[in-house]
Image 1 (cartoon, rainbow, N blue to C red):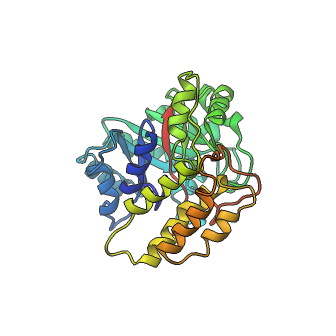
Image 2 (image 1 turned 90 degrees about the horizontal axis):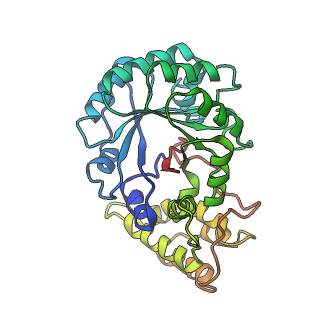
Length: 339
């Protein structure tokens, strides 16, 4: 997820049960771009034990090919193209989900990247921009250019994260695409993942925002998919440990304390959806300004009843802020577990 899935976050998630593989934040590709150093760290210093795919966003053919070639010099599992980002500041530049309006251009980009990537080339897309008129044509382009893995978020770009997920379109992709398809959209828990796989026939699921909320979700999915007699059920004390670990992992000498506390709020906006049904943790957490204040709130809400179960699903009406977008306005890219 943009401004989330950096090396520190990947390491923390891996501690609690890593996905089968990660995708980086997206590398922005344009005429003067070079692969961002902080994103390269999540590839070059990856010690999670899981492969990492390098995600690209852009529309210039030459520079996409150049960037893919540069990234293949690093230990990547493959190259991923973002055709799904729904943030207006992104799609207005005709990149990410904005490209779904122009299947011809998508075809040119897929041809360019397929020629540049001898190994694994993957694509993430939504089911359309404003409607699904181009959906089948886009799937045919995926086949034509021999994409190795397709991830489908079952909403249009304009639906953002607000609508119900159209899992029937993911099932259509499974039936039409010649590569494995991963289902994405509201994968909130292991039971939900199992239900989505049954509905769509997908090869696996991608999890984004709900891995911020529940870092145990990949372990739980793996247990559920494998038929384990019991699925791990984290307590609020486990969540307190996660918050502490995440705080220390993302702490750097150059980041002032208040800025770091504000950075933590970005994660805790999601975590708080499963702490209490009234949203009291979120209310108090959002008003903190210091490390001491933040952990006082955490201790008060997470250690008062440390054995109480952390809700596997978000409580109804408890809303994460700022919605589904990161501070720079970019939307979530995802991490994956296969069935």
